[in-house]
Length: 217
Length: 217
Image (cartoon, rainbow over all chains, first blue to last red; front, side, top):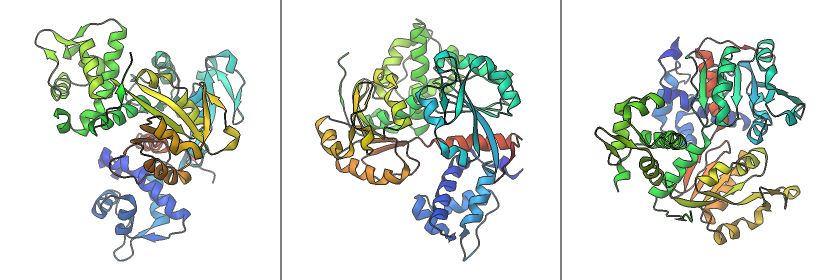
């Protein structure tokens, strides 16, 4: 219930807290003051206290934060205390790159299947997981309790594939296709539009007075 | 000068306008009203008018927007009217995936080199571009007028590589390594933290009442 009131900005910052706390744990640091955490994360100590107060605090006057406890609790808030089955649709370069990210597995995201529409890819295996053809998609999602689909396909196919996924009962789509998906509100979509991120960098370069060079075409 | 006052939120929306206008162009649509654009983009017409007014308007009463003109102007604002040379550091799966994205080239981002520290990768070519070893990095940046470095390396090496890049005079870093880089303010950094995007999806799944299943470990 408490999470309901949390602003989007706080949610966006939580994974970053989680990352820093994870690094502290790796360094065997058991507790940390909000001032020290503030220095490392380059956000103000009052921002940290305010953010964490959304979830009931966690800090203790004169002691600071218990790193392990805070890490675990933020992990729970982020839903990382349970496993999520996911599939990748699109076994091209990016799909294969993501399939090889074992970090996701450690966070509880379990890769169950990889799909493609290119018959050449049939039965190619990536990290031991065979690439399947799209006609198996619907059955596979139902039988394997798949919650998340990662879309690494060209935008031309994305709308069509998204509607198949919705029919098949998918709960969330991590969308790398460079288009906006129209899906029911009950299906969560998180977009990663790489071109747009690169354009923001280019905008800032221009603002910064870098003029690059003129295009030939 | 006018761009100086633009809020971060508007900047973040510009690439999306650019994308929709590009799609309209592909469909040979020459002009569009803010109402029609609003329907397609699922933002209010008043938001569109307000956003574009930041750059002096572009719309004409009773005519709407000239698609080609608006596309070109937004492209200029985003710095897409010039070319930017870039290199990729880290020739693993993700680095290779990005190297194969020819869309970036069409937007004016020209891949000049790929670097890795693994001797096995030496002289392997990706899209005709040979992988070079890190000891060539500094010279290469200077000689090839490289502005942007894409970091697709493990976080353990990122800090070290970033400081080499800064010394070599790089202007911007597109950072896929899962860590925050400490670089001078004059160097632009745009982070793509994939794990954090996935965690936001997992948070929203949890909020939505999906309970997944308990971890074994």
